[in-house]
Image (tube, rainbow, N blue to C red; front, side, top):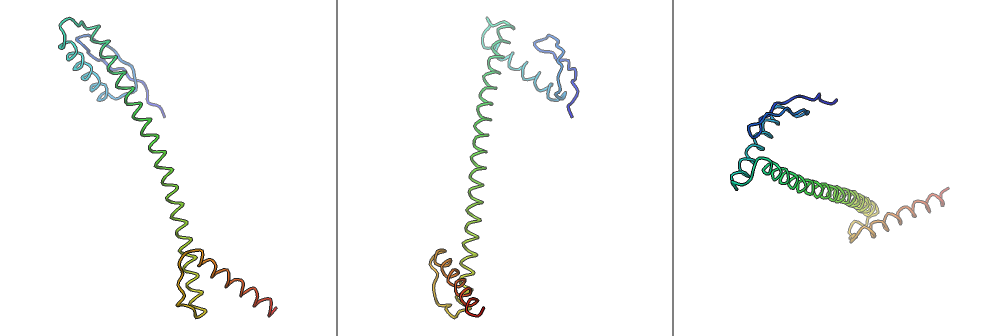
Length: 146
């Protein structure tokens, strides 16, 4: 849903303007105040700067500030993408760790069930080997009884 355009009466450097846009009155009041403050500041820096020159200098400053802000936004967007990528990698690593912990836990359970609870598991590869051996024994038992 788009907001309707509104008319806003602004007085800038003692001249009236009608501005048409979608911004709130509070926003436009703030913009008008900033424009007037900056024009006054620019004109106060040199008595030889007229209103038109001050307006051009103000526009140059505004565009310069806008470009800097756009660069900051792009930089922040890149940082967000980088952080998203890191978050995905962190989640993947967490999932791998959980799978490894589950394998090690299952291997400890197998060792306990087979009376070899004193055997130490040093890493997930050893745990997987214990599980593979257990599965192999079960297959062999089924084949022998089957």
